[in-house]
Image 1: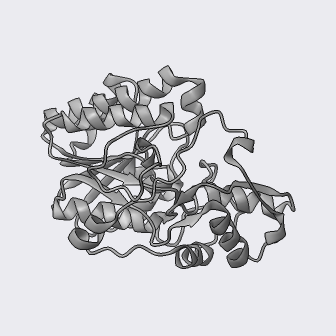
Image 2: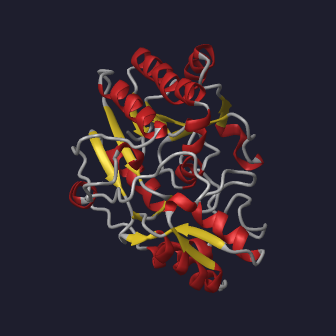
Length: 316
């Protein structure tokens, strides 16, 4: 793999930008942007991509000629899939199919970023081979995209992260932690679903797993989650304590009381045996992960960030 070219789709997203920050030495790394232009220090590494336009995908591959692709780009809003299922499917399935076609033409290997939403949350912990049963349209669309990847004939790995958190780029999409921080800093209450159990995953651990899997040529399916299995109120409480915010503002409520369009699975926590044994990765728990995040706190207001001190893409 040293000396090879790697393309990261969705390079301005939380995972995409962290993959750039943590890129191993010896690789030529490029990334794509769509709505948000890339940070100035990274502009020479970015190429535009309209994922739902096959010609845009074809031009992208002609320009960077990747040996491997890490496909993170998608519409990630669960409720958006309820509002506009055809549009989300066009991007998340149709766009993935366009990437698969381009990979076949280049004989490029693929790492596809999926989701814990492919499970219904009734029989945790989920090993990689557990039956796929989604409770919402977003999960069903992810299942369809996974099936396309699995049937592609390409050398591939499907990675399923769970509840990623960390600092997004300025103007980027919030995650649970940055949403909570914004609300709590305004002195406003935060309602959290008391019955949801999860394994919050610091984005740096996810990026580390993806890079190691690529370098080791890990194939098939891989679950990546944090070390702790906690309820959402427990996670939110740790956010308050680590960032010095008012825990009394947290309001545990039934998930049905929240203004979600899509149902959420109750407990999609993972069996991480493969992550531990084959990749040798021990992910951080919530206290350690949030401490890393606090140490990387940007000078800008919460929910925005400039490029961290790790902007240099090593070997790119």
